[in-house]
Length: 127
Image (cartoon, rainbow, N blue to C red; front, side):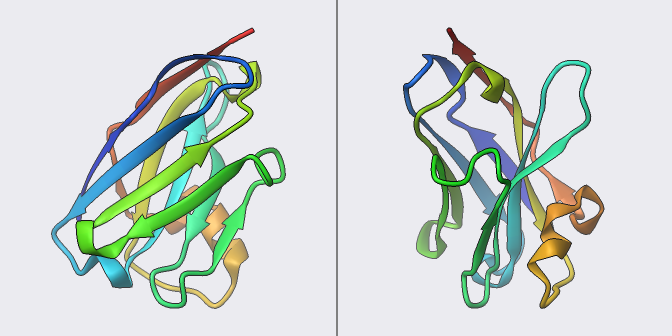
């Protein structure tokens, strides 16, 4: 699976951005996918995940209610709509795909659950 993330940029606090992740190389509708982010000097952290079958979603507490993960299977694309952005959302955002599957949504919160990663897109939120 090849992943290409885009859509990052500079935005003021309170603003919005939509990230996209184009996938290729496998049947997209069956792939469980997630978004992670990494700020300078910090570990990569979970943001949101979307299961391919059933399309259930899970979010980090820090973005719940502000971010929405979605997917367009016809376009093989994963999205992350980010609203009410805060300076602490500043990070490089990565999309990822999992080769396995789990009934537990907790599984998708772990970086080790993902086998394929995009190159990252920078999001900077100014105060």
